[in-house]
Length: 256
Length: 260
Image (cartoon, rainbow over all chains, first blue to last red):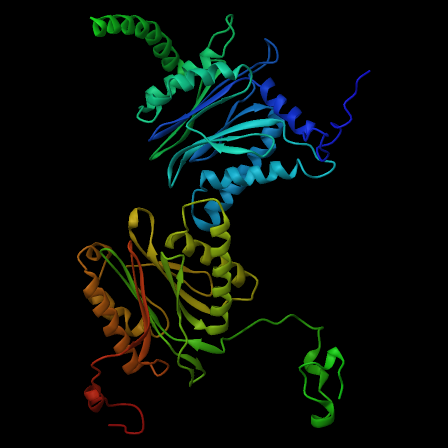
């Protein structure tokens, strides 16, 4: 039977130049439920689908506030995200304590990136099996960073990771031009719509399975769940049908 | 001649006799600095509407001896902050190296937001408080001058105990007694800062340096002065006191050799 000899540890290259353990870790991200992040000139938004293991259980947390100015959304192994988020909380607090400064998002992102990369280059270690979206506001304004288990990080305008996230990314790419100037409410709605896109036909966004996190200039990162997002869900998908009708009419007017 | 490493840097036994090794004992309680040795005197600073002016003379005294007359006690940090040191000069040099390494670390990091005056003051206050808690204080009184967020002028002090203080005018050492009342006459409170111009602030600080030279026996007529604004730091390290008048000395009565 075929057996891959090059995937036993994360320090050995395959003859093709691949490191399978790292690639497998990226697969773990794709197993997690979808999370979406968008930034405008004034706000950064995270939105996520929560999953429950069984009907009787609670939902798995997807968005974790780290410091008052930012939070993360996770896709993949939640336990690995806990390790990373605890580290991020410590580092953020240390920055506030020693410098009286909210840690810059680029700084905290590169610190977890360094940690994650080390795990791919030391024998006996394994990469983190989680991808993160880091969103919030620092001295340089709103930011969104994507973090991958390989230690790769990128600053993004909008991003989606997790199961079936390609559909969400397609939505985000289509609406890319609208994000920069979008208001807080519009940005949340875009995030929820992107989330909806990646949902399978038989599922829906409810107040139980959806999480939203928002940070803005002069506004702390806040996590919205349960009845707090009722209004957003109603207006977003009500308007969507209304919008489609309105758009249809609008286009006819334009054409004539 | 003894070439063994334990003799390096020691007086030669064949010339000076056997070295008294009791000075080198490593046992016994650990001892820390209990007084400063080579010292700098006052640092004075005042906020004005666009920034902060800070000055300190170029003297390092060894007790009452004016030992070094070209010591720069104002230090730039990352082109946005000036730190002024009073007190022990060797501890100042230690802090200088500490700040240099901090600056290098910050420059290597990915962030594009440099540490501002407030950040640096918080950092220094933690350093000073840590050292006093180790019963090994850095024997300095430090002023941090610069801008905080939204380019607001920032001025604060931290001393050898880690005590912090902030005010529109600040002075360390002898200046706290001699210069501070003069500074407060012009800038009594935070609200007044808005109406003080750069020229006024510079003239005020220069006046204080002059009064300090008149009355502080550990001071010098050569000094450094820096103006921090959002456009950067204007640091002059080789200034000389101008238009001194010692006429007032005639009228001083009540101490010295002459009594009345």
